[in-house]
Each structure stands twice: as C-alpha cells, then as structure tokens.
Length: 389
Ligand code: SF4
Ligand code: SF4
Image (cartoon, rainbow, N blue to C red; front, side):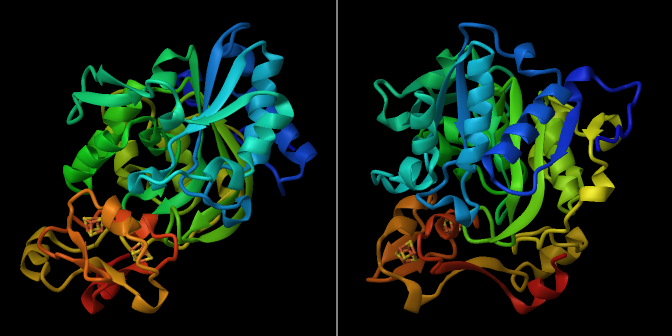
C-alpha cells in the first residue's frame, strides 16, 4: 500500500521522489510499478507532449546481459518507452557504452536486451557514436570545469530527455545514478578531459557540468536489482525491489544514495549539483511519495574507493601508506589492452601485460571499470583497509 511520507513546505513539487515496490522484472510488475511511480511524480503527460522527440538515456556501460545488473534492465526501458508512446511522444533509446573508450564496436545494445525491447515496441535503439554527426561542440553555461563539451547531437536535439539509470555503487564516485548517467552523453574526448581533471571534487564538478548541458526532465531508476561493492561493473547484483522516479535528478540521487547507506551529501555529484541549484540535495526538503525510505533501505556493501575517515594533516603525512590503487591479477588478464586504451592519463603500457606508472596514475579506476575480465582490481593498502569506512 502506498504510504505518504513527508511533505515539507520548502519542497518544490518537482523535487518529489516516488518509491514503488517492484519484486522482479516480470512485465506486469514492472509496467505497474513504472506507471505508479510516474503518476506519483505528476504523470508522464507533465513532461512529454504529443509529438515530442524523447531521448531515453539508458545506462549501457558494457556488453553484458541483464542478469549482471550492469545495465538498465530492458523491462524498465520498455515500460518507460511504452508510457512515452502512450503520451504521444516519439521515444528513441541511446547511450555510448564505456567500452567506447577502447574504440571497439560494442554489442551492448543487443546483449543488454534493450535492442529487443525496442524492436518489440517498434522504436529505435542506438549508440550515439554510430549516428551521423554524432557529437556537437557545445558551450556549457555556468560550467565549473567543462566550459565546452562534445555533446551527443541526439541529446541536444531531443525535445525531452529522460534519464534511466541503474542503482549502483561506483569505485571512483561511490555511487552512480541519475546525474552520473548523463556522463554518457558526451564523446570519449570530453570524458577523458573530465577524468584528467583529477578525482573527487573536480571530477564531480565536471560530471555536473555535463549533466547541466543535457539536463533530463525526468528520471526513472531501475532499482529492482542494483549493484553493490565494486560497481559500476564488477560489483555484485543486489535485490532491492524498487522503481524510483523524479523530475529532479538531484533529489532522486539524494534519496537513492541514502537508501543504500550513504550520506547523500558525501556523494560529490549530489553535493555539487545541489550547491549549484540544479536540484534538491537536502533529504529533509524532498517530498518522498510511496514507500517509506526506512522501510525499503538496503545497506549495500560499499566500494573500495570509499571516503577515508582521517584528519587532513594525518592524511598528508600518511598518504604514502594509505593507498587505494588499481592492481593487476595477471592470471585473469587476456592482454586485450582495453585498460591501456581506457586510461585517461596514459599511465598504462603493455609489457606485454599492463604495467601502471604510479606517478602518472590519477586513481580514477577507469581501467578496473572497463576491464572485461575483472583482472584489474582496486586494492587497498593495509592502512587504507583500516581507515576506509
Ligand atoms: S587487465 Fe583487463 S583490460 Fe587490461 S589487458 Fe588485462 S584483461 Fe584487458
Ligand atoms: S591506471 Fe587506471 S586508475 Fe590509474 S589513471 Fe589509468 S585508468 Fe585511472
């Protein structure tokens, strides 16, 4: 049963977040949960008008099947696309998989099941990079770091963008959701540029710059089975049993990150986007419709790259010993070179196995994220294991 939670007088109607139970990926269950979550946030008709072109930005990180919980589940994509069609919109599904870093032709759309879902509905599913004139140089007003990006033409030309993230942890940013999902809307060059700014605050600022350039009008999160631990690629699937939606991606990420055991304002993308007025980050100011957060929270295992709870001066002294670094498991490595090609800092050489130049490494963990074999793991030093929460 739906249980209204809190309504704060400060709450903007657009910062409402709906939480709806959805036990599995059966079509009826997902369709009903998506419909209910959309109705709780004002209905699809509030964002899609008849004739609108609508980009459904899925998370298509790598060529993996839906059971791996890496990509947005096709049942959720199909349900949202169906709602858009009902509203008279013209949906198109798209992303640029992370494996594009490695320059390969990805089979991600088919393996994820999303292509089949699109075919069933008679709509298109594409990878941005395979389209004609795929990326356009675009200024980002109010940017902190990325004053200009190569943004997907499809995103820029769509009347409406809907973000369809998967609920997952992330080795580098701890959590990935509706805001970070939009990082896939820019070309490899812009992604590398963002990574090369460094980790933590600067990278988060760059992600938010990109989010602001292609800001979705709505987000629907696949939290039926999420990913915990070493997300977004090598973590474990975790049943969470929810569909969540909001017209405010910042509010959605604030609620979703809380749900899995983070303090939302320690998620740097949430903190940065909220500070810039791009949405509501304060949990107390968000109207949660549907299930009570406390009733559905699932404490996810946290990724290795989590925050180190240590005084800054001690960190300066001890940084040599508090390491969270990528490390090769040679027996698992197929020497495919994807890590080398993925590295934004050019810190990896093949000799013939990957060797990391520790001085050049910016600890972004892209190599670990992109390795298809799980052979590049993120390891903590003994002191880091003691200090990382
Ligand atoms: S570590 Fe992974 S990505 Fe790098 S060469 Fe080996 S298998 Fe490929
Ligand atoms: S070696 Fe890995 S963690 Fe280091 S900069 Fe390159 S991709 Fe990032």
